[in-house]
Image 1 (tube, one colour):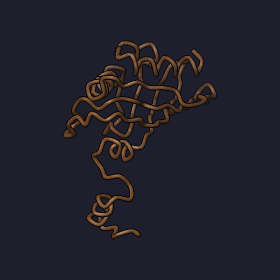
Image 2 (cartoon, rainbow, N blue to C red):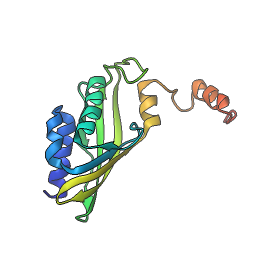
Image 3 (cartoon, rainbow, N blue to C red):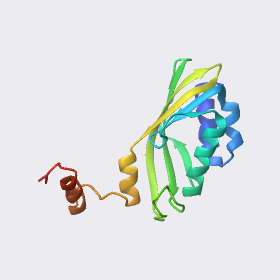
Length: 155
């Protein structure tokens, strides 16, 4: 599988809500991490459980490519965005019913045309702000939060 085919299938797996769709894309010793995983997830079953949590919280979640994928045969990188409406609980956060778009970058190590390791990078603070969990930049709420954190008041 070339890089575009691999990441097209990766995005279809996340968007299609079929945990079994990850298996043909991942090497036997696959590991995954993103800002919401406290430690790397080992194996496809752990990735599938992580994906189910996303699907439970965002039943309409989908992943779309946002640019050219890069790869050299051993490593690959794919820009994308995750879109969805927050309809289910995320930890202690109750559904906000807000539609959000979170831009991400997936960096992966490849082995024999499969994903050996994948790490997704995205702005957790921006996602929390979009969900209304954190205050918008420049608001009194943000200033109060910064003050409480010891950063003082900004002009």
